[in-house]
Figure 1 (cartoon, rainbow, N blue to C red):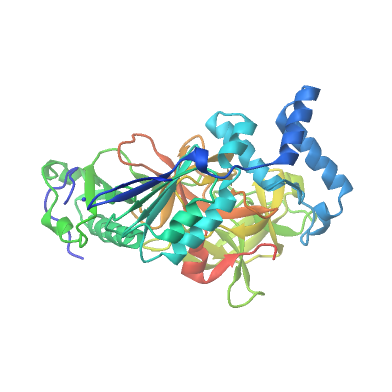
Figure 2 (tube, rainbow, N blue to C red; figure 1 turned 90 degrees about the horizontal axis):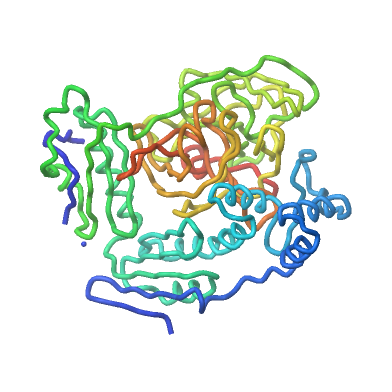
Length: 486
């Protein structure tokens, strides 16, 4: 890669239902009023009962789930790795695990539990349809984004809007905007982002760089921090011809912003694991204590069901060929030594992750979603979307929730991360690295979503936000998948 030696600056390169079209773009809007409505009769009964008794909906839901757990054998029958704190109970289309995510989203967005259900309850089922659509039209799909409040979804296509996309959109219970003739695909955006990012990263004038793309506008954004000795030579006048030459699609633009503020970092070490031992709980599970890191989920090889590993963030393996894993005091705090088998971090195209052996404990399909609560994993998220509701557990900042703001984000060391609207420092910090990010889904357990890795900045923002690696890194880098209940 040829290093960039010309000044860089913020600069752009040269791009029934309501339908608007032109020679450049085509737009179709399906109004929320005309879309299908979600009916949840069991939840409505709980709302009425809560109002009559003068209690909160959260209390009514918790009481219902607790009653079902005691009286319905099916609620606790499928616990192959021992008991957990969330039973296999559903209320209409909402599992008990998903309801926990929705409680977290209510707190994160400052709305009622009922409003959080309205905003985010239908998204997992809707996303399944949209991911299938995304895969079907992979060669034409320009991107998909969901509003943070769950009120609408945007879908983009390089060419004309496909008729099957319209038919799928008509089945969704919210406003949908479809755009066609954008002139680029999501794959082309990502390829351009990688080439631009890697060129900037290799330029010795810059001490740090972060990049991502905006699918709606077809813009690749890069933020660069000049090295101290190069500050005077980096003038905000024009984008260099070297960057221009990397853009092969005229419908894609590049915006490079020079800043002196931090744009990315991995979390540093802050704590150490306890060396206490106990036979109270023989399991090694996701979300456990790894000292200066938190463990992620347990994974299984796609080629051999008996080959399983314990996972964490890739940078947690830096200088740590062995680690000590400990359960939390609720399970006796027992510890074991584990050994590194695989690592993907510096220069990794897939995200970042590391795999360790199980040591002297037994791997499970469960994970800690707080220091004293555990649950089963039933699925792994297939594709990250802007607007996804995500919660995380990290032993420094606890359980927090937010929404995905950018996908396919690159920092100075790895690609294919995503950034949420959770503020770094309070919602994620040192010691959280490797922690599990999860969401709700159509199944009764949680859906594995990501790995806490650090913090990142976005163009136009002065704050740093929590950054994660997506769980697809396990398949792409190592050939493993999340070990979940079959």
